[in-house]
Length: 145
Image 1 (cartoon, rainbow, N blue to C red):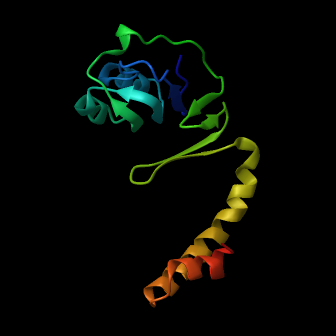
Image 2: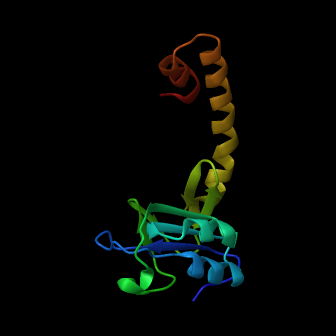
């Protein structure tokens, strides 16, 4: 069910307490060429997940395996992760320290155009704050808020 060179996004029903992904599934995904997994739910076998080499982001952990209650219901359909709708083809940016960002495919060009402006504004905000200014005033001055 997995496709090479993709980020697998899994939505797990909130009432499920089992893990949606464990060490065996992570190893299988890695072997199939999946680049990362984002789990709106639980994972287990944390040491095995790390050893698999597959970057995995998840909301929680469980000691209960996926076979207990987890079943695949659909593939390549929109899912919701923490209130954010993720659709097939969306761009998923995963950062080991900062987390995950979803960019809808139709907004990619606008985001690429906007990001340098945001980075520049943030650099000016940081400079003002380092110089003793307030965060509120720096944001107001450089980011219009």
